[in-house]
Image (cartoon, rainbow, N blue to C red; front, side):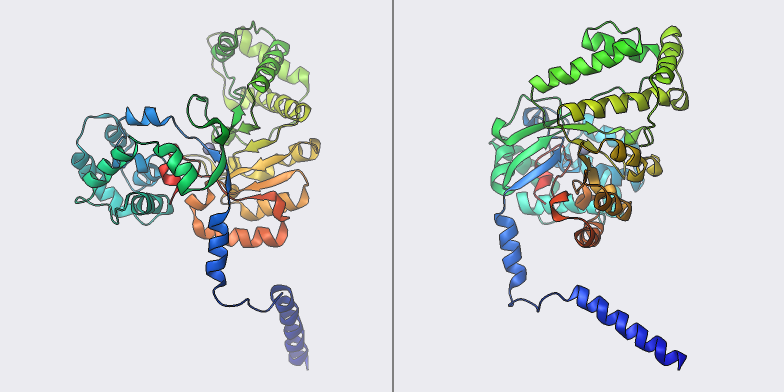
Length: 400
Ligand SMILES: [Zn+2]
């Protein structure tokens, strides 16, 4: 009897689950193509890139096939075993294309499988018609890249190949590109003050005298207001590379004490633990300014690029106190918080002011993106999920 009851219960649960999942009968055949065509016809807002001046690229040591490895693929080349020094040689030394490939090849063979490196293969294929990267094709691929950059390649890729409406570029250089296609994000560097040197650097850069916490906050405020005149769309916080994302709401007095200690000991460098209070305090001032001027705050969460970091520092749940305190500030959490996808879902569901941004995510892992997009669409309002952004230095890799 007990077994029958359990079987019945399981059948009911299974029916209920099916009722949730089967919403409509399957559409007419060919729907995959119709969806693809619809998506390809859409204009894309690209929420995050670090696009470099294309003229700078043509003058650099990566003006050949290695351009496509810069960046991200280089992380996996190094992760497979190549030393940083050897990789830097590829970018700076005057090696021939074939010599570069000879150094790269064994590491490419070990890491061709990753999504970072699949982007390189797909870009070579789709943009340059080179179906496989190998000893026989690297020269041809390099020549094709150099030919392309003699034309207005930058805009051809953005406009014609990728159908991008505009890009939010995370770069200090605004001197290039069709202005109508660019918006900018702005970073404020007040998180890493661990020595008098750092204070003096800010002082010098901003041309302001800083000898107290109050001066530091005033300098930040003037930098923020000046940046507003220059027009920026969002505030960017990328500090998950160097510290935990928990920003304690500290009293001015405590932050001031830390500032004074640093200020009065010119030859000392403090540990992060010793100066965290000041870093936390400055984050709250930045968010207050974002609130005052109605700017969304984009925050790097999840995987840090490069080799070697503390993934636990970048867990988006560390930010919860900010979401609670600044209900009127929109926080955009980058990179699908890889690998904290479900934590991200909970936050974006729970807080009206928290958004998901999938930039870079599908380059890290297409299957994670797909898996979590299912989960996010089940849990988070669709208006709070942003889909596109390569986080790349070059435009080429956007078309993979
Ligand atoms: Zn980025």
